[in-house]
Amino acid sequence: MPDGGGTNPQKGTLPLSLAEKILYDSHRWVRDVDVQGGHCEHCLTKKLRSGETLYYHPVLEAKPVTANGFAISIMTEFIENSDPEATKQDCELKAFYRLSERLKARFPRLPICLLLDGLFAGGPSFELCEKHGWKYFIVLTDDDMKSVQQRFEALSQSAPENRVEIEFGKKKSVKQSYRWVNEVNYIDSKDKKHKFPVLECIEEKIDSEGESKSTKFKWLTNFGITVINADILANEGGRLRWKIENEGFNNLKNGGFEMEHAYSQDKTAGKVFYYLMQIAHLISQSVEKGSLFRKAFPKGVGSLKNIAFRHIGGLAQLTVEQSGLYEFVWRQVSNSL
Image 1 (cartoon, rainbow, N blue to C red):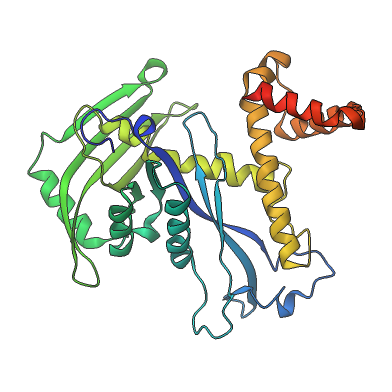
Image 2: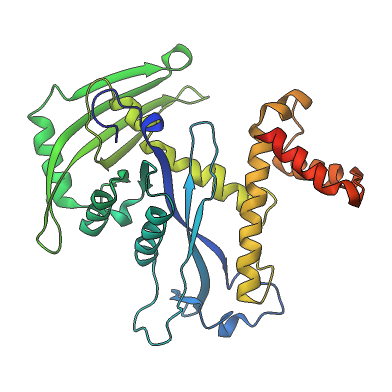
């Protein structure tokens, strides 16, 4: 497993974002569903400040993400109350442990780098990644892991050599200031000791109005950090997690797929439709970012929704004799390999 100085996480490991998304909730169901009683016995519930009960179906999704925008689903774990005898609801952490075991079983030799949010910053996650030989970046906000934050600040002040600044963009409009500590100690809730690097990036960017905007990013990771690779780990590693929000969930929710709409009252049919939606999203991304599409439409088609309409139009005009259907499909598959 690649590690340490000069390692590019994209070349050494597969950046894989695990993130939760809401399939649909009681505010988005079609009218003929009784939202007051929930959708089914597997619904998760949440009490709102208004006193109302929210019924919803979240999903934990494993998506490899790339710097050029691909966010492709390879495994899904539905978060649902499947055990009628359980005293607690299913949750994202439980789903994470289930999904991780399935990932390792399905891809035992695949080098993986997990891109996670602060919910997973804890002893069980560190142990799981160590057991499976996985790398990770875990987002660390100012409110997360106070003891780690304090140790990072103290150790960083005593190691001024662990800093670097880079500038890039038009007229060097973006400045990134990095600092890091390679060994931050942490004791989890079970008194188990852990040690990991912490990387911080403060980015200052000049916006279109000429004003400077500052943003801070911080990650826990198990990549060794050096002056040479600090910016690579941040920009081609940790920050790729935001790709799944922009390229993945945002497109599925707002790009014409209408993921948050309930297309079926039957829970099994709803899951089947969800899987079909992931396949459709894969095809959409392949067309959108593929070289053949750019050659055919050098000026684009206006929007992602228009790509879907072009697909429909193409299928409507496609005529294939039944006797030649197998040969047609096989030829298309062979040409794509």
